[in-house]
Every structure is written in C-alpha cells, then in structure tokens.
Amino acid sequence: MRAEFDDNLITGNEMIDSQHRELIDKINNLLAACEKENGAEEASEMLKYLSDYVNFHFEAEEKFQEEISYPGIKEHKAKHAEFKQTVAAMEQMLGRTQSPEFINLVQNQVIDWLYTHIKGFDRSVAEYRFIRENPYRL
Image (cartoon, rainbow, N blue to C red; front, side, top):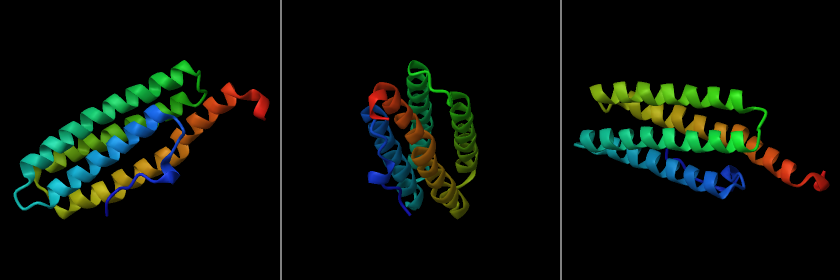
C-alpha cells in the first residue's frame, strides 16, 4: 500500500499542502527502499530524511498555528509529539532489520496516522484560519 495525496487531503493552505505532498512522497520512497533486496542503507537514509522532514514540517505547522492564535494548538502539538515517537521507534526497528513488521508499521500506522491527522487536525486549522479571515461569510 502506498500513500497518495488526493483531494481529501487538501487543507487549502498551499504551504502545508505542499509539505504534505513531500511527506507522502518520502514515505513512499521509504517503502520502496524497504522492498529492495539490498535496500537497507537506502531505507535508513530515507528514514533519516523523513525524520528530519517531519520535524521541519511540524515546526512550520506549529509556527503557523501560533501566528493565527489557533485555540487547539496544545492538542495539535501533542499529536505531533506522538508521531515523532513513532518515527523514533521506526529508526530503532529499521536499524535491526527491514522486516515485514517494519513495512506494516509504515503502511498501517504511519500512513493511516497521517491521513487521519491531515483530514482532522490539519483541516481544522485551515478552517479556523478561513473563519478568522472571512467572518462575514458565517
């Protein structure tokens, strides 16, 4: 199973949407590397890049939320921390082996978490911003 950025994941914030596209691309590259017979080094490099990109992306999202005084920022940061822990666990797991368990973790927990997070938490931030900037449309 590969992740796919589709219309259901669009938040309406171009910066966030482009970063989500990049994040999904990196997850798919990680899965592709894991499926290669001798792809351990490439998978490790992709996971490190993914980890760095997750940190970059979450910092950008949180800064944006602070700028618009988003009231749910505390809960959103907690979800980000949860995902960072998952990525850290993946780094330890991948260091041992490119097991089917690792691939399942990426497919079932990482991709599912990301879809749920974008469709719920990230979309709510975009909607909050829209409402703040367009109060006459209520």
